[in-house]
Length: 101
Image (cartoon, rainbow, N blue to C red; front, top):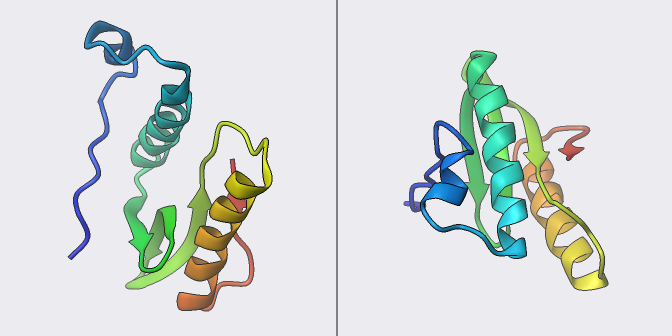
């Protein structure tokens, strides 16, 4: 079973509880996307097998969307990591397209 991902209900808490490094920008952005998906009433999961895809949206008992969130893809390693996670989810759920934010 995959470990649980935890998101804050208010991203303002990141500064309050001590998350202040520049590397946390990606986590904050992922949290913002999570909150937007949640507020729109989406049923949200994440994919983790060999690679990870940040969000899967389930509709009518099927995964209908795969979404990857990243603050920046500034090097080849990060680019490969983000795309491999998205491609794996697309292939697993037979989806034709996905999103990278």
